[in-house]
Amino acid sequence: MKRNIVLTLLFCCLAFAQRASAQVPVVSLVTGIIKKVIIAIDLKVQQLQNQLIALQSGEQQLENNLHLNSLNDISGWLNKEKDLYADYYQELATVRKTIADYDAVKRVISSQKQLVWEYQRANALFHSDAHFSPSELSYMGNIFNGILTESLRDVETVTTAITDFGTQMDDAERWQRIDHAAKAMQTNLDHLRQFNRQNVQLSFSRSRDEADRRSVRRLYGIN
Image (tube, rainbow, N blue to C red):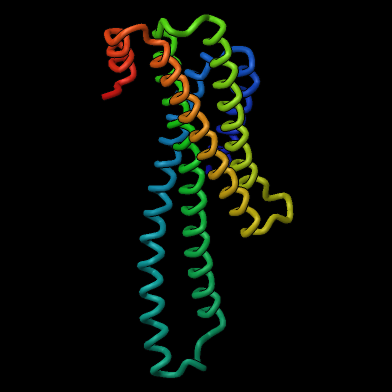
């Protein structure tokens, strides 16, 4: 289930990346994909958390039994009982790690969702602003395209890290890649916000008079 969700996301994101170079407005497609992926991840995390609760209950029972047996005769355990305890704790650790993986991926996807939302809002406002020429709007589109494409590469990095189990990648390296992608996604979001602020400042500087400046403030929600 986990692998299918992430691979589906990766396929859709890569398909979008190929189209993005031709037309930025197709970002509406990835917006819908991101929403579906987040819902799917939320559902899986809930299932895993329910499983974790059940395992933790079993863990408590095992610890109680361990304490009781310790008081009686710990050397009298059967090997199969030891294996049972080991299996419980191994499954518990696996579920906890899986939840952590999903949470990390969800944070990256949520950051991309925020990036897409801020792009859409800014792009619509800039196209409503008479202070920008068609060539300038085209230039903005190229910048937006680059940022969006980079963000999709970050998603690809994450999906590779949590699905490529055929390599000798250990957990430390896997988490390092996820962390790197999360930081890169935040950098993309910061770049987008900086670019948007610069464009708003440029529009404001081109205002002809006070009435025009008030219009710019209203357009961009500046107090």
